[in-house]
Each structure stands twice: as C-alpha cells, then as structure tokens.
Image 1: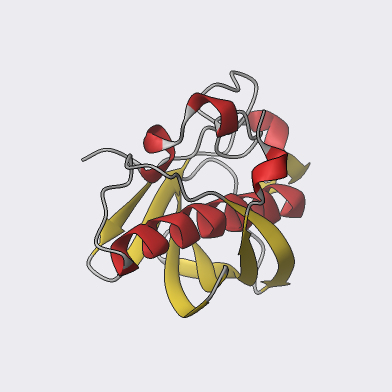
Image 2 (image 1 turned 45 degrees about the vertical axis):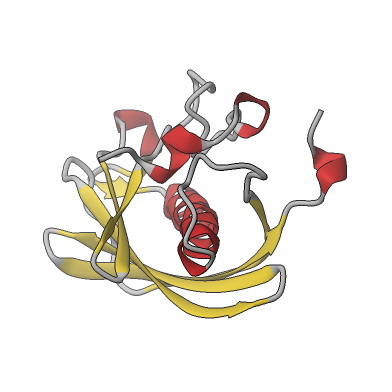
Length: 153
C-alpha cells in the first residue's frame, strides 16, 4: 500500500517532516488502518532531549506532518478520489497544539495514530497520539488548511 506522502507531486514533496524528496528530513510514511491514519517512525540518536529520551520538538514535528498528510488523505476519501489524482490536495498547518503526556523513550519505534475530527471547506482538524511501546506519550491537534495555489512553483 502506497503511503500518503508518496503520492504528493514533486513540487510539494520537499517538507522536512514528510517530503520524500528531502533526503535530510524525516520522510514519514502514513497509511490508513481502518478509520485511523498510522505512521511508524524510529527516532535517530540525534533526536535526543536528554540521554534515553526523545526531543519534544521531534514529537511535535511528527504530529504535525502526520496530521497534514491525514488531512490530505481525508479530503481525497471524502471526494472518493485516488491520492494521486489531480488537482492535488496539500495542506499546511494553521494551528498545532501538543500535550506531552509522558517522557518518550529513545530507541523504540514510535507509532502515531490519527483521527479526522472535522472536515469543513478548506480546513481539516486532525487529532494524533504518539505511542511508545503501546503507551501514549504525546497527543496533539492540528488544524490543517488547504494549501493555496500561490505556495507551489
């Protein structure tokens, strides 16, 4: 199954968090599992806050890009269209809120699970939770806004 991010057109596939064309970035991959979107990501050693624990900024970044990808996939689903159909749906972050619930251990694969809370016009609200070893360590909400045409080159 193709990841949401692998269907992005080249001109919008450079994001540090989710862009497949950004070799220095996270290059997250998100899929549907039923009604939830899921990303799995293994933090790198440089994503350390203090020895043994993941930097909170990485968690915010993962929630952010997981959620904007989920927003795009949700819009395609709502219109019963394939993810690679034109015109492309791409989203930017209008708002990001993250709550850190527990320290996130380093050295384990993280699972980010998202749910679409609302689709209204050009806006999609997504909630996402980060799990480490099955324990919720961070939770966020993203208001994703459909990217204006002026953002593409």
